[in-house]
Length: 268
Image 1: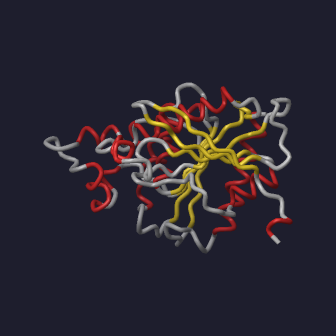
Image 2: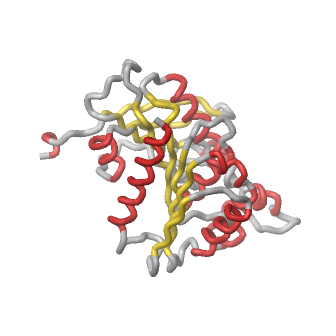
Image 3: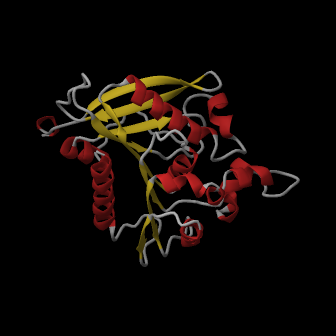
């Protein structure tokens, strides 16, 4: 039955990044796409980016990205850069005590490399989204992207200040937020300190009020900073939803799709 369904074309790449490492990349490309460059396709990068995580595997999967590729002709990308798992300890520990640095830089630079090398990618319609650590990585990517690689982003349940996240996770990778240990690393990785460049992007911030993993406080603090700096953004609150937003999942994906349509239409 699956063989009778329209499926994405899968392309994989290894792209050099700083430090002598190579990022793993997977592109899901619309079936029947013209790869000559005569037609430009918008691209959405899905990011998680947390330490020892990975997205690029041989595992078969059907998800929202598959829908976007086969129904809306959007390229869906995943990039495993520095800090990712399954590629050796040197790659894994490249971001140790420095969350929000090398893994973000690799998302930006690898995406820019893809835009430059693959003629069928529409550089004017490239977006990024993620959930949890991926929501944080999305916000940081928009904030640190000074070359206009990404035009818009969608953060679901993001961390915005590591000092407020659960210590058994954060201290494992960052140490303590003290002057004697790694306060500088915490400040460097704080999204709240870096929002000015989001002014030039379209940004969607989403969170559930009963999130017991990444507390709703994290998004409210980000929203307050954006408002104080007069940076326009869209915000969606899911009342009584936890980190998975399970009871409103259909509404969530329809909202993301609506924002993405607006982003790509505005930029086309």
